[in-house]
Image (cartoon, rainbow, N blue to C red; front, side, top):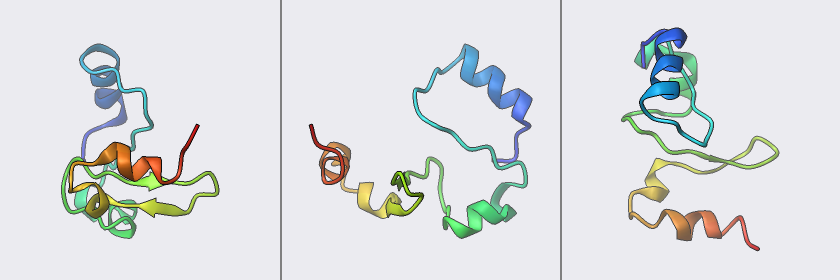
Length: 76
């Protein structure tokens, strides 16, 4: 939140390689994306379906059962 994309890219490339999509919100908490996804904390987990629909949000993951939540949508 609030960092430049250049700074974030350096972090992602050298400190913590993350195999998932990340979002940079240079306007921080006032960013329209942060507001529309109701980001209230970092990290903020959102599971988005192929069609762009939000399937689950941070509240669903608060139980610590990430695999169970994701498993509802993605099976072998």
